[in-house]
Length: 114
Image (cartoon, rainbow, N blue to C red; front, top):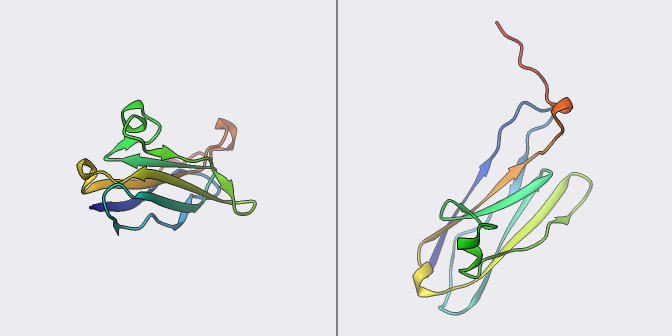
């Protein structure tokens, strides 16, 4: 069984863009084993996706993918994990994380027009 993994950076016009420091890694596992994917980012939010669907979506949750709570590594860095049981129907499943910096509208910088 193989999980295909990649990550995405959300680009925004902010004082600082999110940066993924540690991406989930592709792994080969045996059927019925527990797997854990981790993402570390300078961000205010980390979201996992499974085959382009948010890990918090009911369809993904019903497949027993569990997006764990976010842990603070330090003042600006977060870590989040996603766990699952490796079943044959999940072979070649794509898992990736999205790092976001969520701010209030007053913190967004305007883009100068030409």
